[in-house]
Image 1 (spheres, each protein chain N blue to C red):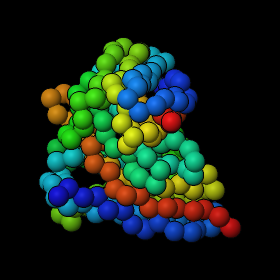
Image 2 (image 1 turned 135 degrees about the vertical axis):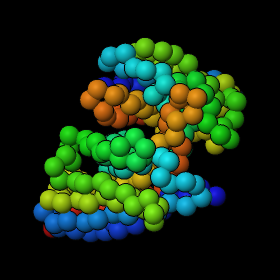
Image 3 (image 1 turned 90 degrees about the vertical axis):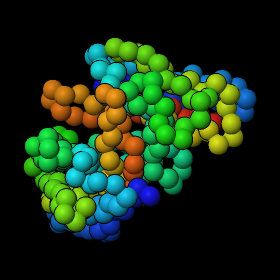
Image 4 (image 1 turned 120 degrees about the vertical axis):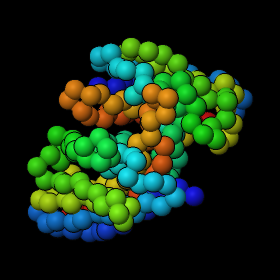
Length: 123
Length: 107
């Protein structure tokens, strides 16, 4: 069974750091791009970052709202992706999801999602 | 930017639902998708590549469109279909992902 499990969320003060983890199982982790997305309370979905698979260079992209503060990485040997979040702001408060980006027959979408982990940034 | 309409769609079980998503500039159909989200749950992929149903998605869900205008149709609403629906695009230059604000389908 394909699974993505996020962990590492919690309550943190503004300006502090937090690292989220996304543990994958049931598929060949290294064959997929992995994304982090978030959803503020009562709001819509927002893309945060993605990391390409190694075969595509393993390069990273970030939303403008987090660029320079967040860093995505992956350990294919352990099937884990990370999101290092520094200089956190109150507006970073959200449920953070990791998701697998699937492409088949030239068509793509986020076909597997974790259950999410809540990050609350507050003093 | 993706714009979804209507913001809320009030329908009854058995009725047809037509949800619209408009992009501010032309989108590659390959990178366009629709998701369903219920309260307290992660989103679920319904349609990818604008018109391909994801694994396990009932055939009452269908997607169509190209360029800047895309549509999600639910042919006959089942009680479990009342949820929020998001459209999503990936653009390559510069690389980024955006979601529409969502359409809530309620009773």
